[in-house]
Length: 274
Image (cartoon, rainbow, N blue to C red; front, side):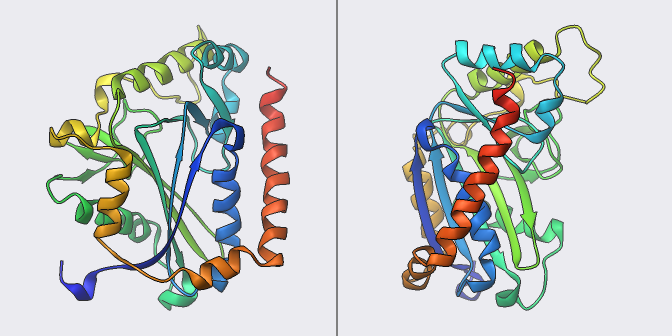
């Protein structure tokens, strides 16, 4: 990649625990609302341990209470996000990455596919030995039209949200760890949630072998920390002063508090199932 094509970003990293798991999407939502004030595009890296992140569609499981109890018995925390439709796993081997592109900096809006492709390009540049493909891996968990795969096995999924200020493209990347175990967990979650009901909601029939990790594909040891560094090395990181000033501003803190209230209200739908 020539220097003229290297993307330039500010960056923000969070290492979260289940106790503050909502911070991931609270910050995502607040940053997207504030994108009109960005001086540069933004990379947001975050990690979260031992958690299944549910999508809005998962509320429709006819036996949701049983599915949630299964997660608890497997020592998994859970919460519901307000983007994407279906459940994904987050643990020590999963990297979550969001790219924020403000429209005022681009001078135009990206199409849905163009925005997704920006994330694919970033990962391909960071990991040049991966021969990435996109397209739905139907037996993965949270299948989507821009699943990232290698040799037919999914290594990451992408979703996006947009408003009048910009777009955020969100990726979970299976870097390392036991991906078949993750797949089995989500398969069992949907089995418990559906039981004998007709699957009229098209919840995925998860095959654990439909997914793999970057480490397994490369056949070389890799950690999430190492993956973050490779991604950072593939782009130009800019001074964060203006971002820090924005995130400590009274307006941004007010926006965070509004998003916290909204996310807590969303979780009430799950608490009714406990």
